Length: 143
Image (tube, rainbow, N blue to C red; front, top):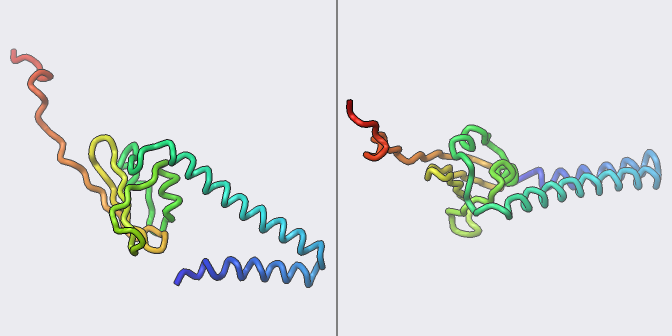
């Protein structure tokens, strides 16, 4: 169970009650204003991340290798979307846990990220085999 969904509202309510006990209604107004400001900051960040992601193709990232190096375990889906500036291509069925999203770069390499409860539990980088031989028209002439 995700205790953060329970403890954050309980802590907010407890803070309001403590503000009333120690400062009366002015304390409640101060703490209430601070809580509303905190909620607005989080909402504003989420909207900014989604606005940036709306202008990019789904599942695209500049470099899959760099994404693989930057992401950390337990990162939230919102954090990964903010890093890639793109929504991931969903690879798992809708409304099932864990969720799997894929981000692909222009070279064809991709990172599959697995999220359980909105948190990253694993990721896997897949690189396509690069051709080692140069095309015939780009090879230098033989001496």
